[in-house]
Image 1 (cartoon, rainbow, N blue to C red):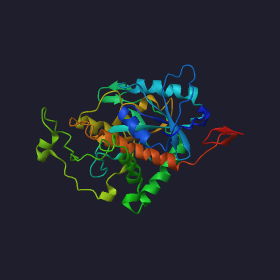
Image 2: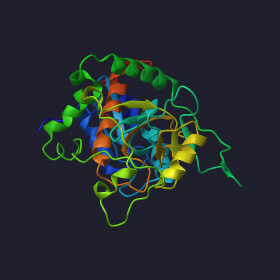
Image 3: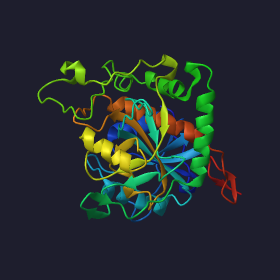
Image 4: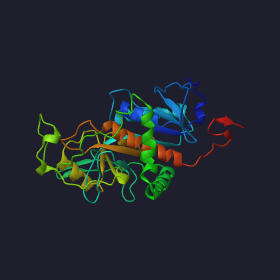
Length: 330
């Protein structure tokens, strides 16, 4: 086995944050090389996986297995800069529930939703504010992603749209990395299960498989061109402590908050502490038909997009650094 590179903590400039182990696995597949650990500062109880993507050294961190929600993620990101003082930008990368506003916003399983809308907030904590007779009035806004990352988002979006061949787009290219790993290649590939979307008013029938539901309640959507199988959507992301499993409430909240296209549970816990770009692969439709069949694939598409963001971001050297990648000072 090749000897890992060891760099000083000051050489790391990007933080990649996950929640679930399946998200961690997908992120680390995207590393170009793995690095040895560095000594951590007193008070930094995180564990990191360190490595490089393109010209950027990255620190990958997340909460303990089984922990989730805003408190768990705030705990993690609050410690990162104790050790890694040069980390300037972060990405929260993982899975989320989609809001399928078909046909205007044709969100499907495996698509990626990025918290970078042209209009409206990037992340809304929809369950924090004043409880009024007609619902919750959100009274506090969260920080936006770093301006640098929003500029990179535009570059990636342009490259994605300009790709002339399906086998050269960012998802096809980066997802191929899983094929080299015998213990992950089948787990993280696109499921053979049908991508089924049901009417918001139709609840899951207990004790049954979705494939056995009455087809009258399924939303008919045209097949996608294989060259356009995975799409990227830029939208407000709704973050709260509850798992969203109601199609009707999902649609009501989405309409109230800028036609948001994704629900998740952690982003509100870090935007004000460690401003990030939130990248979510869609693994279900935030309704009662929620299951785990698409989680690994959705984590893989989110990690692929995050890799492209980091590859596209221009290298920036700290003052006095002779070699930013190696962390060597003049």
